[in-house]
Length: 190
Picture 1 (tube, rainbow, N blue to C red):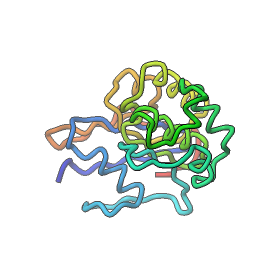
Picture 2: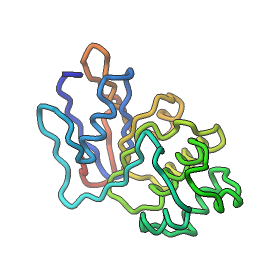
Picture 3: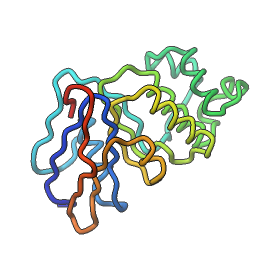
Picture 4: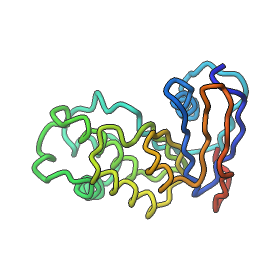
């Protein structure tokens, strides 16, 4: 096993950071929570009827127009474009095919889409990959304003400290540390 058995609860309003060295199982926990077939022992319990919003580590494979992407994801186009503008994208960018965007611009699109979705639990895998400093500050601000229930993997310690309500620290030795215990303002969702 990658790490010792871990037990934690995520309540409404909690923003829990999964931290640890590369290869210790952080992304595997997110994929497992998202319903992907990940080999594991033990039990994962999610509340029934849970709606998820997922931001994967990679933004590869995004194609087409922003308008089509909004339609396919069933999100409000105006809200999506507003968030993208907050992330520093120029309006002219919205006329270009998404596949021509930089990796950072596509990652911003994934984050904006997620923030437009109404979900019980947001699962974000390294949301700041390829993101410039200005957009990082905007992501932080939007999280603090919207207070989503969020389970995320991120290596940026300052970001984790700013937005997380707790941390599950996976150690290379296989041990796990919970700091501090999450104390949410709602029902248990994970």
